[in-house]
Picture 1: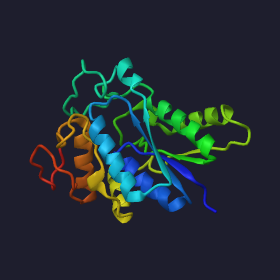
Picture 2 (picture 1 turned 90 degrees about the vertical axis):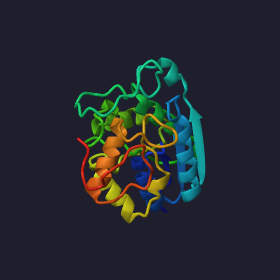
Picture 3 (picture 1 turned 60 degrees about the horizontal axis):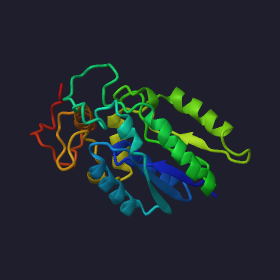
Length: 231
């Protein structure tokens, strides 16, 4: 019998594709979503609920970790830091939420140990992301060792990162083959209604759909030529 798995589902397109992969590989899947006080929390939660409705996992959990908003330090959570337009900089952007993925894995591990689940799936992307330090494969391998040390001897949990070395355009092509509902996913850092089209995440998403030769099904607040990339 195939292993069961927990999928961290943010509402973004990477975790959506990973959810589809896990749904194929596992006997049962469980979806976990975190509300952490992000500015697009309402829209991401709506995406999660639509994705749950689509895949019908064995169970789903929404965890509130709004203390990350109180900690601040990120334009995604801190009202004193505006979400900037795309700049093309290679530096770690201020949208980085300090050590967020560790919080995600910690909660997923607690749930996995209770459920007896052996896999935790994450949609982290190292090579084509915004340069977040907690999206690196080395980070997840180290975290996997910590999970092993911090759980019961009989508990064996693997952190599965199937798209970590893929480009966003390759992930989109994979999702197309899996027939994932990209119209339910949300990437914009700024808006909860219509994607702004100019923040780092929007530009990366738009360019990736263009590279994949596929038109993004979500609406944007700007006119987009789907043949030309945004600088």
